[in-house]
Length: 163
Image 1 (spheres, rainbow, N blue to C red):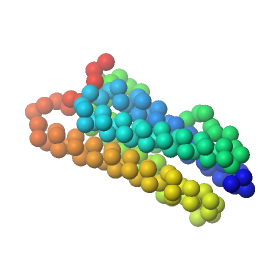
Image 2: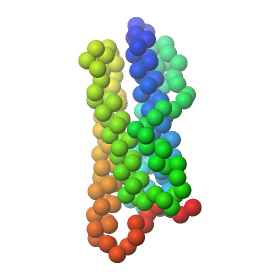
Image 3: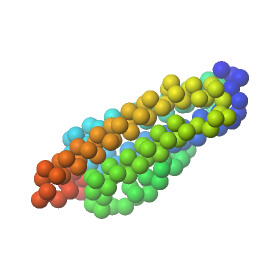
């Protein structure tokens, strides 16, 4: 694998920074939630991103690069989580996380056609399937929350832990 060109290492590090940011975003989101089904799903999505971080770090080392330690932007989601916990409903939190998951999914699925075949294969085998799954998990959480809210319209939007 040492013949992997530097642009692939740069692209892998770009993916790594996004994955690190996704983990940080879930680390900010999870303490704001107290509804068990939401917590389970958010933790599962976070762990998927943690595994991708490890996969990317190893791949970068395998091709002679140095893994980034700094996170990047994850679809602008982190800015939404900077406010006080009470200001963010579960619906808004899930919507923001879904946007981040979609951003990551699009990043993996829309590689430029001139990207190296090695990188395209790596993304298709090691990153894109897991990203589609975490995107699907958050989609399921959004649907669950909407159904729950429709079933109990008189309730406020519980599920976010108060500070």
